Figure 1 (cartoon, rainbow, N blue to C red):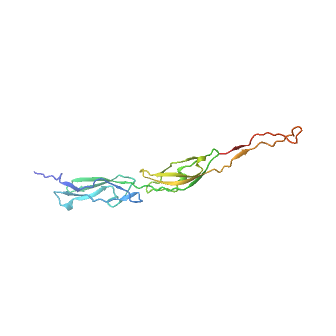
Figure 2 (figure 1 turned 180 degrees about the horizontal axis):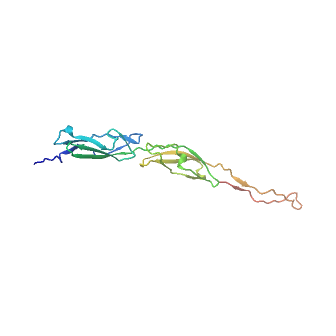
Figure 3 (figure 1 turned 120 degrees about the vertical axis):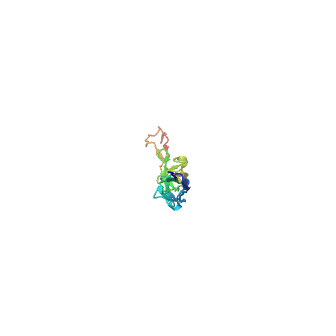
Length: 212
């Protein structure tokens, strides 16, 4: 008997390469499209070759792919009706390429009894937000103040997301000295007159003043 095999006849006409795209504006994902793969077999009619997506469903061409979970693996299988199969696989990666939005709010802080004050990034953050990240990293370039800083100071807030995209804004931090100075006076003095005089020479320590 002579047997003619069909082992090498089934092959892909096209199989998409790996896909990498940035997110759609203000979204944490992107619509992704590709041309579905097709396969042929020299030994069967074209319509007899069946191509089925076997991995990645329900995501398929034209779907929204999320940043989370990337890379997404997509796989197709082709079958020629004679028991021969081949697979085509590729990945879809959506990258968050959008900067967060830094939102500042002005803040006032009072010096303490040592003439010092500190602030945190959260106190000048006015509601910064991101298309993907709900837990942004926030930092400021200036957090400690003293008497030399009384008045308005400009503080830069930096907001960074999980993909190292960042944005900045500037807040006005007003440093206030609202602790009154103190003064310590000598106690009341009672003296007798100097001999032969209708008065007396009196000495006392100078008052002691202090301020934060």
